[in-house]
Length: 261
Image 1 (tube, rainbow, N blue to C red):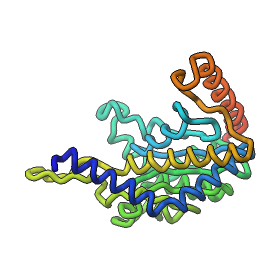
Image 2 (tube, helix red, strand yellow):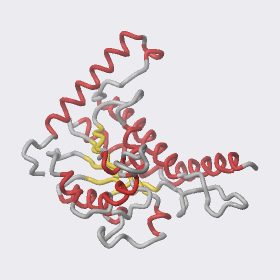
Image 3 (cartoon, one colour):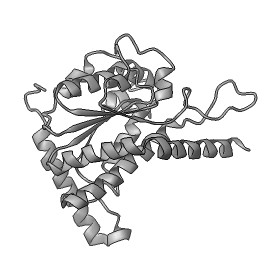
């Protein structure tokens, strides 16, 4: 097989493992999300580094709906400049700084049924670990989306003091290998083609879909951001505005003006 075919085969295997091993966890996560959204609360989403990708995949985009609150700190997720100002070196340093998670959490007032979903392939850096710890201390149920194999392949960072999977109420396994990259090429020292992102995106879309199904059953489904090709231009515009107004309404109550947590 070519390297391209090898990666596609490995990605298909990840999706198959997710289906075989994570269905029960996805069902539980979806039930928690539906309960939070139906009770006028929020499911908060947090990730650093490339774990920002599933945060943005969940909301806002076509086929998504309010009730999910993306929290993406640009200092840890803005990678496109790579080097220099706002570069990757700084982002990787910042996500290991203890205490920062508490500062982030202090911006919000969390509802009694809110949920926190935290994404980290390794689950070892201080900020995502402390986000989970701080959210649980505030009474939120925490869902960790992480690679169990990758997390267990190394010790937790001293600043974190634990792995993300040890600070969560529910763990969803990305089913990606310890080194993440899946393709070894003769003559090349390092493997290429990471798999954790496809696992994370698959998990959030499975949760998003099942949560919508549960919300419809409850009669509590928010408006869905929908392409004009599906519902027509005018209806697409209406749904877009309704969804953003609903997100603003929920988020307005969640922002802590005093910064007291």
